Image (tube, rainbow, N blue to C red):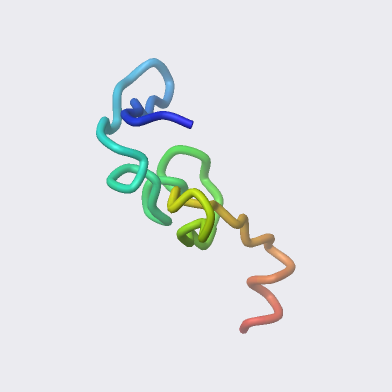
Length: 61
C-alpha cells in the first residue's frame, strides 16, 4: 500500500498522485495494455483491479 504512487512505462513517468487518482481502467490499459474493472476495496478503500480476459470480452459481444 502507498499514499502516493508514480506510474511509469518504458522509463517514462506517465502519472503521479494518490492511488485513487492514478489507478483507473484507463491507466491500467495505458500502462499494462489490458482491459480491467477497477473497484474500491470495501475493507481498505483502495483501488482493486480486476483484469478482464479476452475470453470475457468475447462473451460480452
